Length: 287
Ligand code: A2P
Image 1 (spheres, protein in one colour):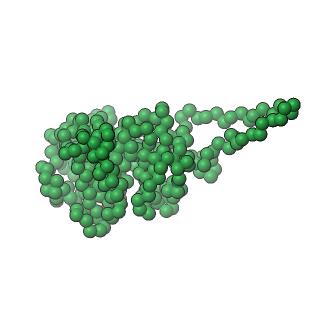
Image 2 (tube, helix red, strand yellow):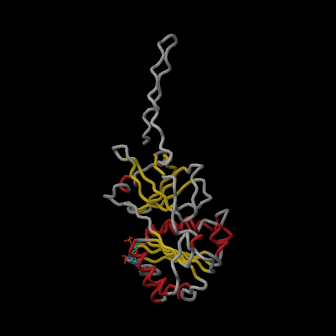
Image 3 (tube, rainbow, N blue to C red):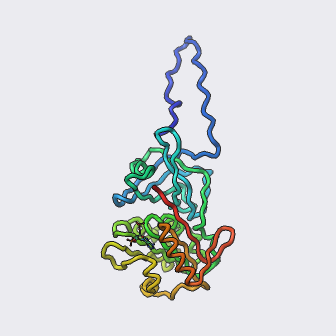
């Protein structure tokens, strides 16, 4: 629902009628405030997960993997914003987001009801460290994710730059249950027909999924699969090597810390935009 209630249709004044009263001065737009975007598409995967697409203003620039504050207007007219990774790539004309639904979450409990045509607030300044520029060149790129932590990687796997920089791209996605892998699996499956990266992903991109609370081909937390070496055996690749391998990590705070510790143990150093290195971490929470 738009906050703009001043634009309702006014009847055209009849000829000879006295001039209409001067319109109330428009509220000055905050040049740094969020813009109001239109919901284009919504897809629900489970009772905990959904994805949506919104319009992208011409002025909105970001690097694949970054996050931005988005949200809704509260009943008091003030914005309620949370950090969300942009799940679409930098070249896309629309913006995509992948979200959890928290029943008592102030934002997601309302956001999960949005329909095409509704309005969503979008902050103007994206940021983040899960970007290719924060990593030193390497041969193999790992993207480790759990839950909605897959979102920034949904952006990066659709960006040609990822394949120009790496010979091999391995994305891992771990969830509690199989149904929670639908978004990542559908997305990666669809890339083969993508006009931009379809040819680049062939033989280069691999999605490794595991679940922790249901039977699946691969079971267990990603941290356990790294520690035991099962991940590398399953993939047929050598263990992580700081000479050749780079990593990005996105999930819950605990998952990030635990996976980060394993990267450090493997000899990788943490990078940032200012000082690119061998792995980067980030989290984008929504509540
Ligand atoms: P588990 O089922 O063993 O808790 P969530 O939905 O809670 O964010 O969890 C998403 C996935 O991340 C689950 O499979 C969960 O496994 C896993 N996970 C939770 N904490 C960690 C952690 N510290 N390290 C690695 N994986 C984790």
